[in-house]
Amino acid sequence: MGTFSIVEVVLLAIVTFIFAIDQFSLTELIYRPMIACPIIGLILGSPETGLVVGGTYELMMVGNMPIGGAQPPNAVLGGIVAMVFAVKANMPTDQALGACMIFATFGQYIVTLVFTFASTLNAKADKAAEEANPKGVTACLNIHMAILGALFAVIAIAAYAGGTAASDALQSFADNATWFMAGLGAAGAMMRFVGFSILMKIMMAGDMWGWLLAGFALVQLFGGVEATASAALVLVAFVGIAFMLLDFRINSIAKNAEGGMSDGI
Image (tube, rainbow, N blue to C red; front, side):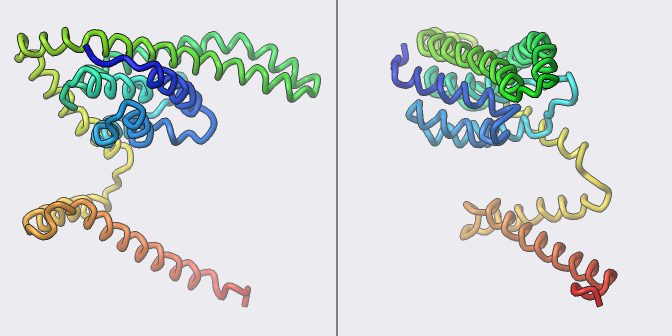
């Protein structure tokens, strides 16, 4: 059985409460897996696992955005469970990511349930607005966010306790059902490509495919050279930033030429 730590539980509950609210308020940034998972990794004592899980899970979730009342699998709960499975239950990253999708989908329903309940507060918020009472409106919003954060924190604690207590059982199951764990790992490894494909389908315009293929070509070129193989993606990122700045500069010059001098002459 994994080691149970009260300090880890308290810190995990606090950051989960913040991440849950950050999905819809605050910065709307730190809840993303690429930021949240390394923070959770620091709490659980494995920041390197947080970086790997966070980067991979971000690719899975990058194309999933809530549209209206439709909620995608929840990035916060999925990331927390993946980290607990990877660190406390010693599951490989791909298997942890495959298993966490069940909880991410469950988080999707939790958000929908809380939003449904919060709709009952709309009448009170409207009444407070009619009375020019901003504190009343703020109180309704705070109650909504507090309920969401508290539910997520409770689920995170349950996931931590369950993953820690069942680590030996999960390891035994993994040893006896290698076929299932192999399938789970394959599913987890595949999802990062599915997530990025969804993003490409939404964002990719016809004139962008050349840049995408050029990026793949550069990765292969840098990766084939021993001196640059370990930093191939970083080098390609810098090349991409250089082209982005160049494109921005060219477009700025073109717009200034069309609009005349900047002083209005």
